[in-house]
Length: 283
Image 1: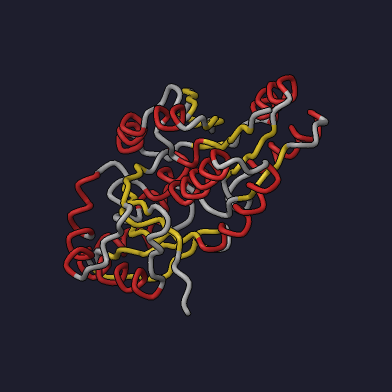
Image 2: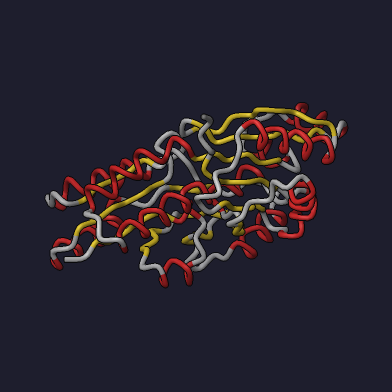
């Protein structure tokens, strides 16, 4: 009896890495006009951002149908395997609900569904932790329980480079987006308690990076876990943040990179940068 780890494409896993770690990734649907894609399957991040910047309207994203999860659950049931599914925050998507419906249809008890209350590399932190626990011999129930304990310590802070895509998605008026562009306003966002919120507004990139570093100082990184530099479409944005962290002796010891994909990229656009990690406990 094996334990199967499942997530969805909002985790932004590199599919080769996911395959190597025996992680199944259920894709989200991305719609550009009449063209429909499956994130990570027939739509790479590079192509996604190219289409995003070429178009005048935002694409739409939708959660996997219950049938997409049911196929995985039925396969596990037939093999007598257990399942731990760690999915995009229920506050951001109906993905969790689709998985719950599929579990009900499957009628198989050892399927454990975890609301990550996070997105993108924040999900990766939890999924990789689950893989580590799986490989150490824990049961699916125990893995799900440990992930539940850890998920409230996941932190994501990021700078949005442009307000245009929030405008396209209806989250800002054209006037607000235009005013932001004129003043070079750069919001800092956080994913906390399962939702996305604006935690700072800075004029210019340098001020935004300074504010981001302040957030990282107030919510310090726990180097017992991997940390991720987040970027949308432009990995070179690391030069705005990582050298400054290194100068201060705060560069994460276990640093990885995560390119933001369609699920979050639809709303924040290109040029974003940030960090996803586990916050260190204060004593």
